[in-house]
Image (cartoon, rainbow over all chains, first blue to last red; front, top):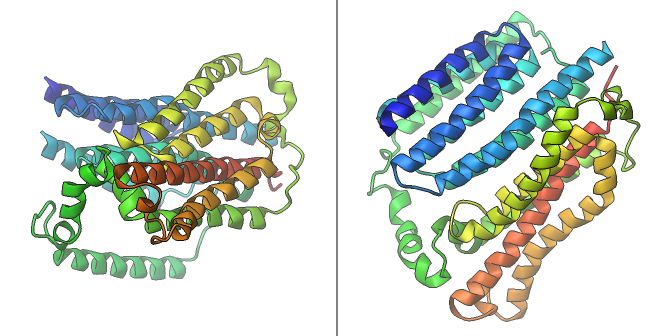
Amino acid sequence: MFAAVAVALFVTFALALIRAISGPTVFDRVLSLNVIGTKTILLIAVLGFATDRYDFIDIALVYAVLNLIGTIAVLRYLVGDKERS
Amino acid sequence: METLLMIGLLAALGALAVAIAFMDDLLVVTMLSGIFSFTCCAIFVLFDAPDVAFTEACVGAGVSTVLTLAAIRLTGRREKRVGRRASAVGLLVSTVCGLALVYGTLELPRFGDPAAPANLHVAPHYLNESAAEMGIPNVITSVLGAYRGYDTMGETVVVFTAALGVLLLLGGSQSRPLHRGDAPARADRDVILRSVATLFVPMTLFLAPYVQFHGAYSPGGGFQAGAILGGALILYGLVFGIDRLNRLVPERVLQVIAALGVLTYGGTGLVTLALGRNFLDYDALSAGPTGQQIGLTAIELGVFMTVTCVMTLLFQRFASRRSEP
């Protein structure tokens, strides 16, 4: 069960990674950064449940709380960039 | 299943590294580095190193992307083109270094080898005696804080020194005029962002002390808690404007607390010296595990103060600087 979920998550991760590397626009990459963040959170949580290590949840929790900071910073940068030019 | 996942994640790391090397848009490079950090974290979890993964999560998720972006805002988004000759030399040097590193790994013991020197010297003592000597279940915390207390003190001083370097380079303790991106006229924009941040900042503020004080039982401790609290303050600054962050926590206060953190750490060592034991030998504070726990709490508090203030200071100093035309 957990193995199937982990494989599915990894496939999603890989697809988002392809989008992140190939682009072409910055917004594709912002989205894929966010998707990969979410997939990592889920992957860590699944690994924690699969191996009975519940303290992995703490790591997932930190990502869940802090993940949006990077995205907001990138978008803020783009807004500033646009207003400057 | 874990082996397959590991192969997949390592392949992703390789692909990302090549992609980062070829990109010349630094904004894209920053985002790809963020993904690199996520992948590393997943790999650390697979290697069963939750404490390392936790640190990667705390620093990689919030602080590092923000600080890189802030630096790019000052320097420009495009990588400078270098001549063909310079890049050929660079390629040669990095290929030679890479081959030397690969050659070096041939002599290393295999992963998890019980006969490896790292697993024979002091590690058995840490693993077998930590519970009795420290009275806490998380061996990593007792290694970082007590057995290898010197090293952690060095790391705290390094963090503090990095902040000093940035403050001296970017100069001027007064905050400069706002750059256009953060104009107060934004107040009626970004309604969703503001509402989300109003919910998220307090939650993060709760998470930091949990990570700080639960570090004895689960991954966490002063450094991670500091990075989380710093991340919360940075989020506040990003959403509500650097001006409000400066009013909430003035740079001068942060500078003093950052220095006090290092002082708390070193001071704990001096107290144990004054009580007639070795530097950072917590047995001086009280016999048995109690003394160790008092010492650990004190130094983790010092690390927490320094890391929180340094993260926030760096962001403030970068963000309040007017970007180059």
